[in-house]
Length: 234
Image (cartoon, rainbow, N blue to C red):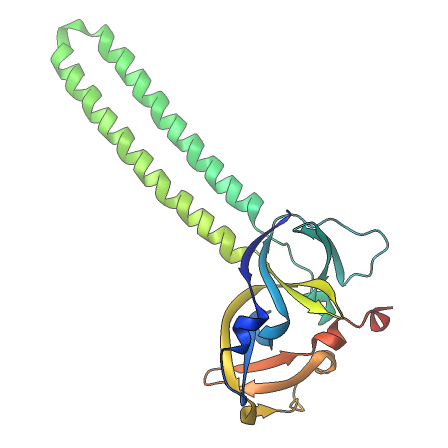
């Protein structure tokens, strides 16, 4: 499978959460803006590892993934909203960081071996040589421990820089929405729902079904029906 499933929703479970006056949304971020879609239409949240390109597809169609045996079309929401295309992950950058750390560890090991060889040639200072070798070994161990920390940091940075994918059901078909990052599932009262503000970007307004004014920011409700209207993509 070309995407790692992080969350799978069950409609029967979701129906048991919240009341009639509350709607739950899966939130995600695109270019610093918070968006939300109803949790009822969300099937999976993925960390896409490989996306196969589709020949002659419009720019909004990033490609396809194999999700548990089903071929699912991937829609780049950034492009759909008139934003620049971005890299899916920072794997190359993270790999370079890890490679540099491994090279550094190898250099420390080479220095340690060289020190041991020199100490062996100095028979008259065997005791001092043994102490130096022990200190060198401890220093190498400390370097190895220190190397593990940036390696873990690089892994976390890869995940934070990795685009996320939200798979939704639309007209009995599955589509995966490629977004910058995924947030929490939040319940919102229907009475707090508002129409699109006049200051909203015209392109975004085309795909926005309204907004919710949260304590710290504005959440735009993404209209998935309009977003996946392929006739509008033509």
